[in-house]
Amino acid sequence: MEFPITRLRRLRKTPTLRRMLRETILRPEDFILPLFAIYGENVKNPIKSMPGHYQLSVDLLGDEAREAWALGIPAVLLFGIPEVKDETGSTAIDPEGPVQRAIKAIKAAVPEMVVITDVCMCEYTSHGHCGIIKDGDVDNDATLPLLTAEAVSHVEAGADMVAPSDMMDGRIEAIRDALDENGYDHIPIMSYAAKYASAFYGPFRDAAESTPEFGDRRSYQMDPPNTDEAMREVHLDIAEGADIVMVKPALPYLDIIRRIKDETSMPIAAYNVSGEFSIIKAAAEKGWIDHDKAMIESLTSIKRAGADLIITYFAKEAAKVLRENSL
Image (cartoon, rainbow, N blue to C red; front, side):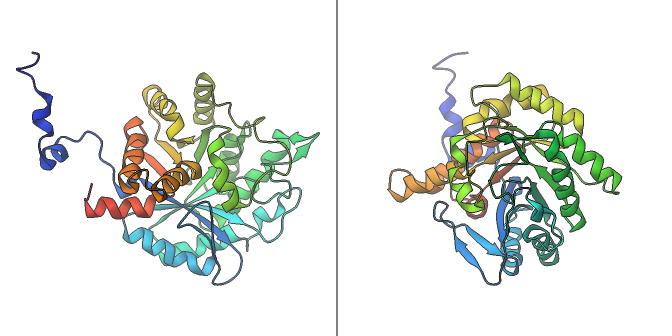
């Protein structure tokens, strides 16, 4: 039937009808909150390009976790900023490193919270790249043992899940083997499977102090125009043992999220990255957009595209808005 018998506006008339028929439901349980752990005590360094976010010393992370948990956010993703960096990122496996200590602090504060750790070398290397440098580029195979050692050290400290973000070929299989050999076959891997060499990472590099000293990461992160390559990356990571596959960034790559959802049965995470966050913050500060509505709309679009989990700096703010049911 067609107009005038069919009138689709009938079912949009009231807020209650719209809620009843909503196809995509965004919940605080969908969110993972990124946190940046740093050395020291009572340290709360503002990240200027990411309003409302901080580098936090370990003694403050317990309270942060409690607040997130109280809002219904079930998980955090940890990044570490070490005191000392070197060519090989050796401090990444320090049992007293910021991530290892942060894991213990958060699990002590909220035992039920899922603590996920980013596994990469870029925060720990003096050159800011994601592995061992050879002839001006990252040596893929030489980097794998560093990543496996870092992943095992995180799990030994109590991490519930590891998330390799380096984009080295073969790293999922290497980490899976290392975890299994050390008795951690129950620990899942969230793979940064389709991680693009994006312009939207800028504010994060301020937060993690991981800007490369030379060149860029295009020789190991994906070329933004490519979609078939993303599927090859995803299928390889699944074959190597990934339990969750991730797309990063989220909003410019909703088509990739949808394609993975259509072509696999895997749980999908999407990283709503720092640039996506800061753009909304800056536009709202100028009065050009409504902050809360733009935030919820953008996060809903990520879930609508097919993401099961959303890593987002909006996690706490969005959870509060959703709880208030004000949109």
